[in-house]
Image 1: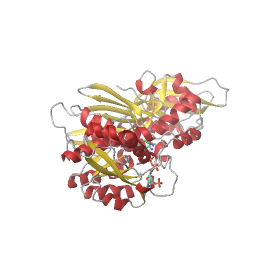
Image 2: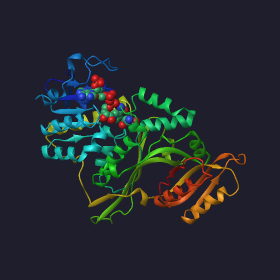
Image 3: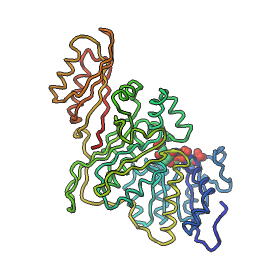
Image 4: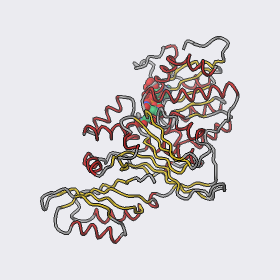
Amino acid sequence: MQSLVPLFMTQVNLALIGGGTVGGGVYQALQRNGALMASRLGIGLRIAGVAVRDLRKSRAVSIPPALLTKDWKTLVQRPDVSLVVELMGGTSIARDVVLTALRQGKAVVTANKALLSAHGEELFAAARESGANLYYEASVAGGIPIIKVLREGLIGNRITRLYGIVNGTCNYILSRMKQEGADFEVVLADAQRLGYAEADPTLDVEGHDAAHKIGILASLAHGFWVNPRHIHVEGIRSITRLDMQFASQLGYTIKLLGIVKTHSGPASGKRARKCEVQVSVYPTLVPDSHVLASVNNVFNAVFVRGDVVGDTLYYGRGAGQDATASAVLSDLADAALDIKFGSNVRIPPFVPHEGDGVVQRIDDTVSRYYLRLAVTDKPGTLARIADIFGEAKIGISSVIQPEGHEGESVPLIFMIHDAPNSAMRKALDRIGRLSVVKAAPVMIRVESFD
Ligand code: NAP
Ligand code: HSE
């Protein structure tokens, strides 16, 4: 790429590994705002090369053929390259790319939350050993600078609550299903066409992409590496328009929420013994009066409560070419400054703090619930279900049964008071086996944000 910076200015050469949605976006954004960044930073950013899989592919953002290569390894190892930007996705070759660069002492920027979730501990350890930095702003919540917020802006806070709408594809699907009554598969195809979805969109709709992100945020907030296997994950495939309509009637909107909640926080000023943290992703009934209920389409939002600052909210586009490119540019600026001034560790990318943390088992969490059953409309049905809840010491706060015809299958909606997940699971198991219950119960947790 032609350098747009004065000759006397420091120049950092970077290798883009990936020239797809995000890589193309970064190339385009640097063309547009590279000179602006250079004037702000006093450092020029120059793209030395772009590694792709297929040199002949036609690209929405055209990249000069002279920059393209299929050989990422040679590009990463070039002596003039000091910054490697991994935007290829996946967890196998991408891991090699990042480790190869870090072991050569080169700074790495990545947008790859799946990679960090699977291999974060190893990659951050490699960064520590080599003294090179690993930057990952674009890995969570697209254009929202939430990593910087947690690492720097809120460094003086203990984070007691974090709720995130962190998957743009799911929020786009749920919003359009609610607003237009659109069909799940049609909206998913639109999200793919718009560059929001992962190469494997099941990562989005089954909640794993949100789990990768919420694990990263929980690790940053609580200083222990959250094993992705300990995150309870439910996706949005089972959400129907019927549930959206009943939720709406009850004053709620269904969102896929990532939730990080502390339950036995450390006493102020003392070192913690054990900090138990709920880290989960599931569709949630959000009260319409809560700000997260009105976050729609591809937008993400992260609500963070700190013990000093109180409640804060961060909002922006959560996926797509330009929003993600903006986050990558922010990392490029940090990396370039760190390279220029030799400041490898200002605030480490991830560092354990404040004692041991553990992820709370989902069975031990307590919440309210929305429950939809398909039942035969006949005398005694409601009483049998209410008995099971009563025996499990689970309180019902309201019931809706639209008028139907006796003997036919009708929806029966319960709102359930706070109850442990384990008790609810066991009660649902019994209810699901009743002969009057005609389909698997649909249970969605309700969040109070207290
Ligand atoms: P993408 O459009 O599929 O782009 C992937 C790029 O990597 C393509 O240019 C591809 O080459 C190249 N590539 C793949 N394997 C390669 C290999 N072995 N050697 C060289 N190049 C290779 O994916 P994307 O949407 O840009 O996502 C990239 C990363 O950003 C992922 O980790 C994703 O999770 C993350 N992310 C995406 C978004 C978003 O909104 N899309 C937002 C935040 C983070 P070809 O072009 O030749 O196929
Ligand atoms: N597939 C992701 C999403 C991309 O929809 O949020 C942004 O990380």
